[in-house]
Length: 248
Ligand SMILES: [Zn+2]
Ligand SMILES: [Zn+2]
Image (cartoon, rainbow, N blue to C red):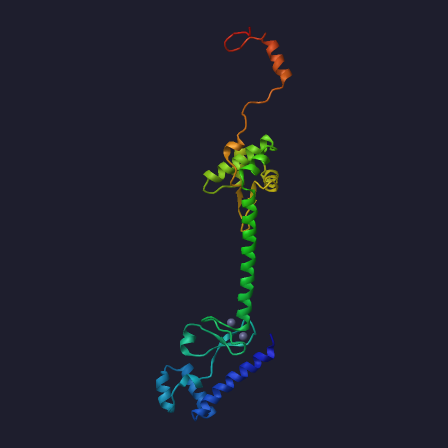
């Protein structure tokens, strides 16, 4: 953006106002007087017009400084009418930026462009996520992946799903407590690698929607080796310790 362009635009804007005054037959002094009355007295626009014998006073008013700078070209911002001053509607005489209506200044156009790009990028990330998520949310994929699970991984994933389903404000602490583990980290990382847990682009973790709790059932009996089992039979002389019966 060229600053000279804006300086010229501001000069032109002021020149145009003086030109309007001249066309109405006003001297510079009169025009400044009109502006002073307009901004600093309670006299109505109509009464000022009548006093100076002109119409359309607004075309001849010098804008009032708003005492702050334009965010884009750092020119002093102005109010162009009393109504705009009352609503704090500012205008930049340099780049023509304003804070009312649909501003078409270079700065606002560029800012909107950046917003669009950002939005488009967010949409791209979101749809890529949805595509990959859907791709992995099949019973076949989940069932196959779960077969390689350790007992503890199953318990953790089960705890995750149960807490998420039942808690209004699920936390890792709650999930860890339920799963009987100290930290979620190793489990959460592994499950994300395996595409069973997913970090959403805008935050939050969800589980693969094809998982069912039945897939994660773990046998509650402890596994006992065959040799230990045999030792126990020997010790008990092959007699049932509940009913006392023996194999034939
Ligand atoms: Zn500006
Ligand atoms: Zn603007």
